[in-house]
Image (cartoon, rainbow, N blue to C red; front, side, top):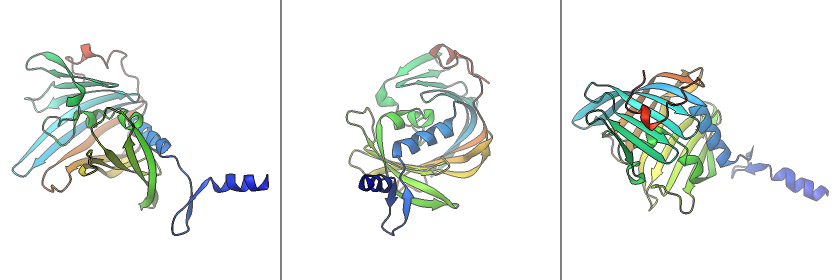
Length: 252
């Protein structure tokens, strides 16, 4: 009995090569906790997107709403030429609205990973729905330190038959649930692009990264910045907001 108890106690700890021991954490739990912290039960945000290219720069402002882990809707509110373009994501389904032709179009899954409005973010990246939680197996492979806080380095591998385009993702999540980095790999496990966050400060009454940067690997002069200017969490939202019928009626 004593031997069994000793094995149980030791199983609660993970020792590094340096001999330092830390309480074992579960990768799935850490990813879910971070996802729920960064998203909240509901959220409303205003974000400035700036696309940088070697010979030009383009900016637009986006208003976005999310609910739960798998519903999001957002519209472009400026510049005028793009105003009113909307995107709705519910679970694995996605629709877009183009005010110039006054049409709602349902996107096939293959188009969700394509660049959104010429940026380095895909439509799936911006909607931040639950594919990362449901389609991947998360394993902690190491720890680092950031501003005196522990960072978990997590390898995320797709589940068999999961409908995803990435062969692997590498995540860095701080112990207080702050999402710091997400690196995307193709089917040959070669890095393609990387998302990093900066300027962590109080937004929506909690710590949150104000700046998100998506950049292709090995391309220094092409990237896209998201700057949060307004953010609120856990507020009541209209029941019919996340519906196809609401796409052609942008909210303020």
